[in-house]
Length: 111
Image (cartoon, rainbow, N blue to C red; front, side):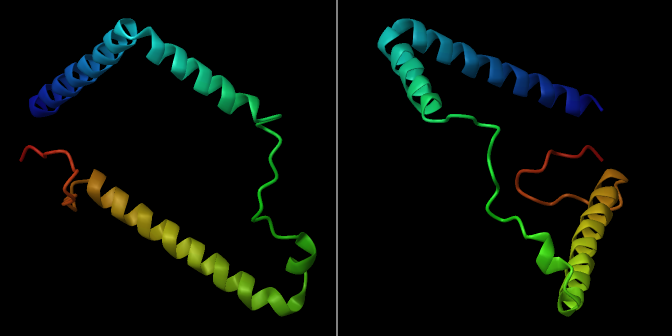
């Protein structure tokens, strides 16, 4: 457990150093801060109502009630279940230490 705490402390220090570096850079160059504020205002002024968005991938309900699409709906539900169940099995295996996360970005495991 102590290996995790050391890594967390190093990550927190690295994050704090990055944040303090950015704050110092903004204090040294006020033009950069002004540019960031102006850019943020320009981007936000182009949006009328951010929460009033209609997603383009919605399927009309009338097409789903057609009996010809029953097999398509069934195959879609099976595929969604297979994907979710596979993710569940993999995640619980990693959490229970029955599987090892061997990606390059995985945190080191103290054995």
